[in-house]
Length: 150
Image (cartoon, rainbow, N blue to C red; front, side, top):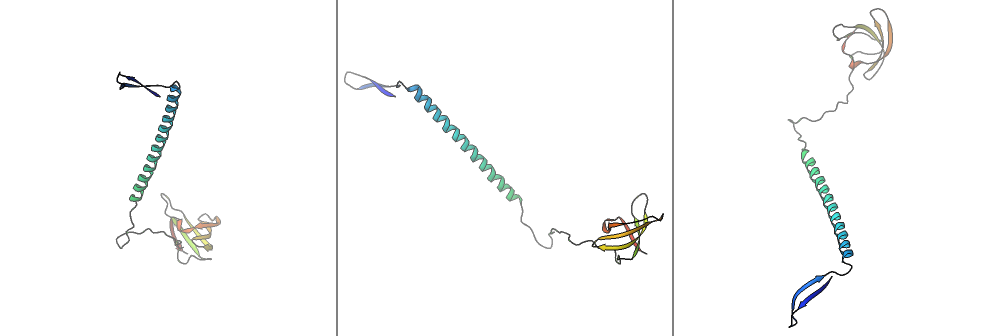
């Protein structure tokens, strides 16, 4: 860009006018590209700032939602059962037991001889009312019914 002026007879400038240099179109284009780049970088920066701000706010809300544990006689504590369920008393190898289911509408009854036990599991030989027998392992605590020693 260059400056031109209109002068009066005393030599004082009356008006100044800016005129473009011959390469002004190229300069305007370069300037526009530079401005577009700066605007793109500014938009990306603002988007990243908003994303970071959102992350900080959501993290703060999550941490505020967790309350401090209240421990005392009136506060329940989480309980994890690790004890293995027990077999009926006297449930040992060689003993015989009568089992009656609690199923509805009919009940099933059979007699079992204990062959072996391992924790809550028992290897039983089951004899049904019609005389058939079969042997296999049973998880005794999960069996819905009652056991009577024979």
